[in-house]
View 1 (spheres, rainbow, N blue to C red):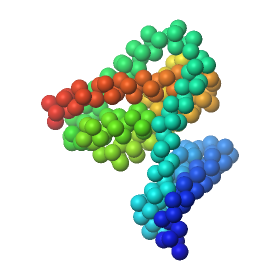
View 2: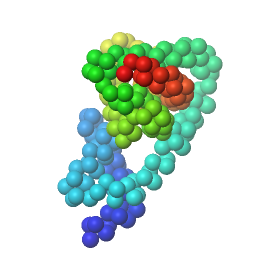
View 3: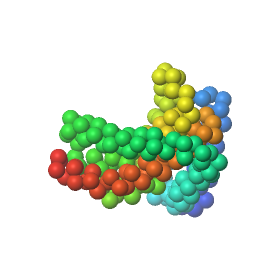
View 4: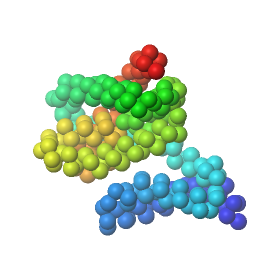
Length: 234
């Protein structure tokens, strides 16, 4: 009976939403990282599939339909930007230069770490798009010869880490400017960072949504050059 249920498309959908909603309830009561809705849902589904010996393919019959909403959800973040467009016009130079320098710095650090730990070229390609939203990261990782499934896990981990350490870092360094907070969260922790930015305020949310798009565009443009650099160094 369990095997028959698991291949039903509704099984993966209902399972995903159920654990996510449960994580939301738990996180509101106990706001600790393990109860982050996305982390809780992913962890719970993995544990359940392992305990019941349900193949991932069976779960993904329905779970894959949720993936269809990744791109529309990312685009929908532009709603906040439209309402706070004046900030973009006022700070566009700082925003664009900050994101571009962030991508370059990220690439340099990744190459240094990869050389130190002797990562293979495919592992470098897997890690390269870790700070952009999943919809973009998948395509970049695949085009560079990375391990796509591992890229997804790393992107999720990066987002969770960014939402956890972002606000404490703002407090520690006394970063109170809403534009700076939004750009930092969006360019480093993508959609999950934007979810945290929405909690901080509308300006942070708008700038974070903008940063997701710009970071993704810059990563896509920079990817061919990164491939050449990887080929030369590794």
